[in-house]
Image (cartoon, rainbow, N blue to C red; front, side, top):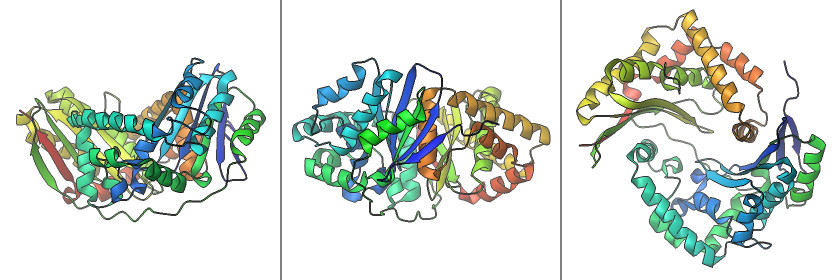
Length: 411
């Protein structure tokens, strides 16, 4: 077994660093921040995502063009994303330019000034993003499902926010939210590159070490027990879109690994997933059918999404529920279990073989667990799941009354 494949360090101001050395001409780097849309108040909905856009619009040292050109100008790529619980800015570059990536991360995270002239333009960019998103029912249905499940809780909020909110964010409001939440104690620097750890630490100390140590107030409130619902909405689409889902284990739940395996068996990316075989391959009802497991720090959701003809909705829902019930009523055999475990381990290894994927994976893991499991350790955990674990976890979560259904009826 490989030992010490990941290396860790914590700067004096609380910023954590996780690193893996690989043999590659390309360096992958990023900063994960434990801030997302669930940290917003009602009038702030969309703020975290807007900040993800706005931190590239000007600092005390650079204007917007110089920020964008800093990495792209040497053939690299700079980007960012926001989720309900995290924000990440990241870059890929030649190893020789890793230092400029880290320096730029530090600049935008600690010196952004959010110039009103730039924000005015970016508001319209985000408004167009919201409009574009609303034109895609296969994406919009997930947000509406979470809105129905979580009600008034911040996890229900759309990450993009509303057009009204975005258009009314002021430079001062953005700066206040940013300064309050994007603090050193919430940051993890993640790097996958062919350099020595000592050299990386020197760069991180140079660009991040002198930043003020600050903590943020804890805003996150307990997630309520989801209230099941069934709702059909008429939309002008050629296809019907449906989402069937229920509560699932959180990031820290002991049953998370077993449920991750259940999700992969049911509707993972492989063509031999049970839902794909039972519904697409056998009946041809769907072009797309898949399941997703989304764990949060204190809750989780499981969804099955399908796109089908409007007159096939009831039949597709029936078939999905039948496959979910089989996870409880028909215990998985040892042969099936071993095959599913091998498949899941192989998928993870292939995904993490891409440097950018691994950088993001280890950054998020270190942010949430203060440790990163190696592929060997993850494989051990997956192989430890038993048929009885599958049956018990599925039996606890896949109760008929626990499911909610949201359907956009087309036609």
